[in-house]
Length: 259
Image (cartoon, rainbow, N blue to C red; front, top):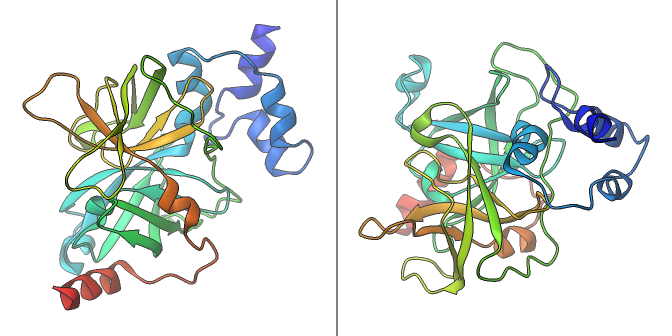
């Protein structure tokens, strides 16, 4: 039985699991798939089932840097819809004029538009092109489920997915230290946890033991030990996911005009 479940959820060469493909093709519902996995997941199961929905984000501050593929900065992110809506931190796209995302398969896709951004909560909602930089079109992306009611408590296990140091996608595990921690630069109380992140992990997904997103990894207390900060997704859930959006360059211009 466990072998069958693992086979259903292990990502294929295109990064999509059998269960994910069946769901996206309408052959079964997400609820039916999740009913097969009522147990809490191990770190290995989280990585096998959900890493395909995470990506490395490469940003470029000038068109010249983009054409030369000399990344100016970077971070992480994750898909929340199959057609290419994705979440990251605002500070990962700040000052960018172009950006791309790279999946665990090695495929790279351009960032088309920014549908929502808010520096005060350090969040952004992006639309990613389904046509790769190599001109290969994909029918859909693997995505993560957002927890409807995170209901986190101190001591709950959590997992962080991202691309630390801009290297390969990676997973780390830890526990929730605090669920409503006030951080001066954020407009919402944050989650403090012990799942390791590094520079480049910003914008990655913080998952609960069921593999659902409960926060976005955003930073750490440099003077502390194992004090990693994640911001809640409430502003993303309240944003207009059907908005036309604007380009990264237009976001930068808006922020410059506001200063």
